[in-house]
Image (tube, rainbow, N blue to C red):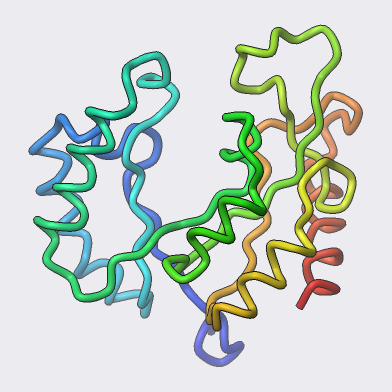
Length: 187
């Protein structure tokens, strides 16, 4: 059915803790074994989770060094790339557009989020910036889409909501529907 509808596929591996910040050889072996599963569903791209919220208070430099060694050197693929998650940039108080300017040529998949702050939540909580439908938050998704197009990105823009802003109640499906409509406009 996916072939008939010309759906692109990205195979996601490792949620929620993935490679545990690079410290789990067992998880690495499981990830490597999943390449066959990705091929079986026709996915040319496999998105790997390197770590999770469980590791957010640990020093990032050692994790990045270990993950780089595992994912770039040990996988031995001529096609290393990344999943660009616009929300992760904002949550680290970094501009997603500036990040995309540096990284667009490496992007193989996306998680397009829009976010805005939640009043009364501490800034150091990961969900201080909560998800909104695309177009309702602070992320300049139009600029992100333009940069991806300029870099000849061939994938799709995947709307993601990981923690819906309380202004939207329990309307995850409505938020995704609106996000898809907005993303289609970005083309």
